[in-house]
Image 1 (cartoon, helix red, strand yellow):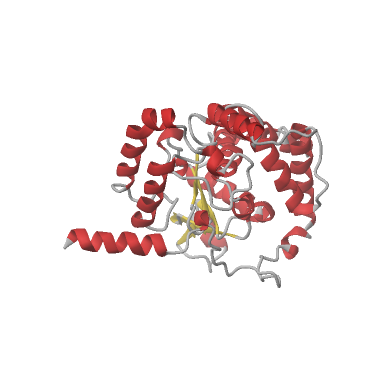
Image 2 (image 1 turned 120 degrees about the vertical axis):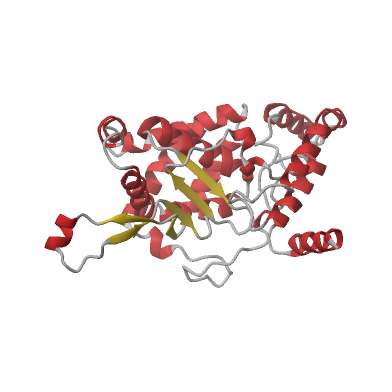
Length: 337
């Protein structure tokens, strides 16, 4: 019975909507535009949003060597994708993206915050309070980047008696969030690319907060519903063990290196078949680490990876595969006479 039941579960998971397959996830926080896209106007018109978006865009333009002619968030994402597709290894891409993060605060004349926080605040504050502080920052300052957010991983914190003596109406304990969750990450949805998510956001953000602020962070993008959890105070696993890289190219990925040009060559398939098969089998034994809505959905994703390989740019062979894709593209360009 277990066999047929498991087969039916996998069939349901394969038929269920999934963002990485091109389906549009639901959301309830913001209104929709007539074309079915989410209306972010109420967030984007905020002065804070405009300053932060403009700062990040300027840093991306410096990295790319030029700005995009497209205004607003869409133009910023064009720069993100261009930087993501630059030549180099995944590690080099992550370092370029981290450079953008590291220069945000200096560009706003508050570059003194990270060293001050790491040396004096982080070691002397309770862990729950430092995690809550980062929750506050991202919840109020970064909806323009990720969309509306909510708190998660709540813990009970005792209210000091001295404080309750002054404010008699306060309860004995309060629930304090330790993580933030974007209901439907705007960045991931607009990118439509696992590489952009992992290499241009997840990895550099985790390393930036860990190294510059002393704050461990595990970012868990969900490729099914495009939600994303930022779990403060939680160390991220090594990247090659992180479930977030077990993902194929998104069906709507705009990268010029996706699709058939990304496919592993016959030699690469032979060399990597055992590893991909092992990883795909291992997926069946995992409890989703925030990157899928169910174990069955994760197993379906793993099966696709086992057949076609991971997203070209989160794969260990990024550099070789990018070069192969560029060569194949050059071969099919007709000669102009």
